[in-house]
Every structure is written in structure tokens, then in C-alpha cells.
Image (cartoon, rainbow, N blue to C red; front, side, top):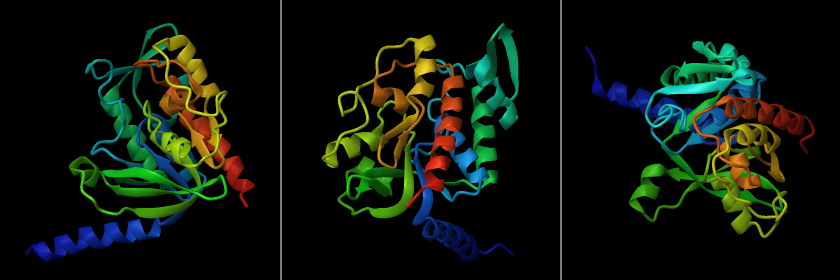
Length: 260
């Protein structure tokens, strides 16, 4: 006999247990696009307590939609190692260009990240940051539905050692820190430089170069890195996004080893 109250208790109790356990962590990632999922996978795999908040219902950022709703993505030669790491099927289109199904890619990234130990909470928005003495120490979150409905409901905070902004084009976490901290970002102007028009070749290179610390204990990856440091967008080629997630995980790991 199936009892509805047992089903309800199972969902509420297990979810809340995970949420309570996540109030303090090593790393908080904002955004479950390809770079955020990659970063979470590599950090969780190394044993770091890593939490990811995604404001949307689905994961993958712009990846599931492929290019203009054609559910295919392109990955260049340098990014093929990530496809292999996650077991994503691909085919050679022509020399140096590999095509994968965007839905399978999203599913594989999500599956391996969760199994590595990454805790993902979807439908939760990061609406503020905790900044103390010119250093980021956490995030402030609320249900995405509260944000959409414009309800006046106070959020709750999550303390962490490092925050990764993987929110894509809007670079939302960095934008909040830049506006509210009173300090300067590690960009040329000290503020967000802004995303430039599409140039895939340059954007793929700069996505990796711009994957770095933007403010003490705040790191940027993926499209957020180019938006913060002024690189162009790249469109539906995803090698740089995947490699950026891996790179930021390595940088953050070194930061955590020296965290005080």
C-alpha cells in the first residue's frame, strides 16, 4: 500500500537534510551551465564540499538548446578531452571540429557531477553576496519563484570559502559584488568590462585566459569570465566553456590549500 504522507515526508526530509548540510561549504558555484557543472565535478571529485545553485528548472545553461534550437554543439580539438572524461558521444565533422548531442552532453555533465558528490539545488537564485573586509565569504539565496513573483520575502545565507560565478552572460554574482562591495574588481577599469560581440576564435581563447579571480575569494569562469574581463561571446562552440570549468577548479583548489 502506497501512503502519500510517507512520500511527502521522504521528499521534505531528505531535501532539507541536504540543504541544512550545505549552509557551510568549501565552494559555492552560481549557475549550472557547462562551466559550472565542470567546475563542480572536478572540485567534488577532489573531495571538496561543493554546492551549486541554479535559478532555473533545467540544468545546462544554454547547452541544451544547441545552436538556434538545433540540439547539436561543437567542440574543438582542445576540448575533446572533456567529452572523453564525461563519456559524451561525439563525431568528427571535419578536422578539429567535433559534434555532440547537446541533450546527451547536458545529461552526462549532470550525471557525473552528481555522482562525484556535487550538491545541486535548482530553482534557487543567488540574490546577494556576503562580503567582509573586501573579501567574499558566502552568498544569499532565495527561491527563484519569489524573485519572479516579486514577493517581499527575506532570503537566507550560505557561508563558504570560495564563490565561483558561472552565471554566464549576466555575470550576476560579480555584478552584485562590484555594485555593493565598495571595492574594485581585478579588471582594467576595476569594474565589469562587459561582453563584446561574437568572435568565436578569440572568445574561446579569452574564455580560458579570463578564468581567474575577479575579487578576493570570487572567481569567474565560462561566459561570465568574458563578460567580466571584456571578451567577446563565442556562440554554440563549447570547448572553452568546458575547459574553463576545469581550469577554475584547479585554481580554486590551490586557493583552498592556502585558505586562512
